[in-house]
Length: 588
Image 1: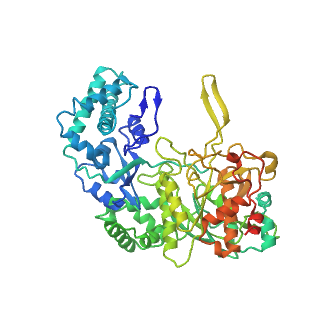
Image 2: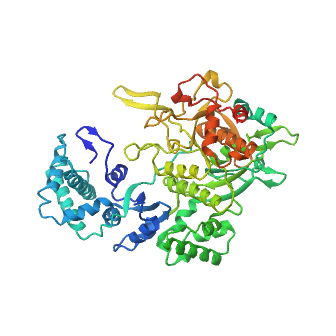
Image 3: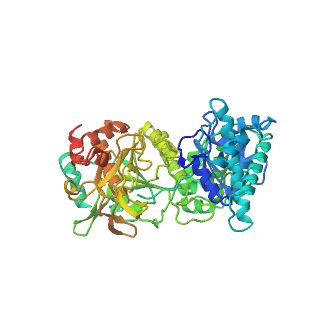
């Protein structure tokens, strides 16, 4: 499907992205988590209703179907995928017409089969004939996956001989025949995997001149709120409590959103297994929770998201300390204010009076039906949409910025660079006036398999998502004390982007950064995850000092980039240079 002999191509117009075929070809009997994008004229909730109302025997509870604005998420087996999703793609609309043509078996389907069998490199048909040919290739691919699955079920792997190929072709014929009765609504534009992500001190404050900026400008960030989309913040940590008052303005469990939206329970919300846990965490009576969930499902039927009801169910009244310390560490770099009994600093963030919003996108454990580290792209997108809701319900911006110390490798065979689901959602949030700061990623130093063994070296064009998004501020890492001497950290992802744009935008300290950890602890961590909150804090200081910059994320990005200090390194490594908070404030 995506090979031309020994060559592989990364351009294709089919609605099913290559990563989906790869996953099902490797494990066709397993459920794979998919992100399904409707056509622009269709809403995600309308598409989900159409899928759920289709005849069949899909296990709705196991599929955990849920819709956000612009996306539907489902965990599907290959049989369910072929039954529910494939017939609703725009590819299927053309395939249905072909399924009714008597000449198709001896025509393009046969040609596609023969070409795949020979792995020929001769050019395919041209112009309008190409679509017929591509449909045949997809049909043969599905037939091969089904044949391979049956072969694995009956014993050890068998050679791809004539019998296997004949069975593949037979399966393809049956698929084309079944499509003649398919709905062929064309409501699905794209099907992709719900991609996994990685979670990418006093000396550092001085390196970016945040300490001098506070002394010179007397910046007060108490009116600024910054969202930390991460593993969670330990709100009980003394670094975030001022005179007994917490500066964590709220905590929300976005990992519960998908289980709550599980469409399998629309007709009986009280049976949703996540509801009781959410009610207990939010301090909501179970009867009230049922009413809230009923309202959420009712709103989905009208193609809207009832975020006000969702907010009440995912709020954490007394947020438990997170099991992963990453989010607490990131939050401490932005806004810790922790001193000992003598007033001596233990951990001081760049904005020690800022308010932080805790948006948790990592589940504590991979329980059945829950969001886990394997499907957090949906959770991150939902968190970004939730920030838009929080700002949209007020006459002023309530959440001024977002910190994304996480990374998802760009899958070049599936998306244009900077146009993945998470990148597009970041662009929408920036368009709504929110500053988004993202890690460049920790893929700057890699091991490469060669004929002479493993070779380790630096990797250019290694920026990850959402750092590939054009409007976000993408941050690489440097040394916390001597950035001019040591330059860009070895692990920091290098640019440019895959489509030739300058990234990262700038660098900040990310090596052995001391910050807060859950349980009243502190310690050092490395990574662009630690560099990113330095830039978030600098952006917050700009807004605090110059309120007219609130709601102007592109201007803030320009100020930070143009005031950065050149480290004398390659632009694709350092971007515009080292973050200089004092100069940024002076330059406005």
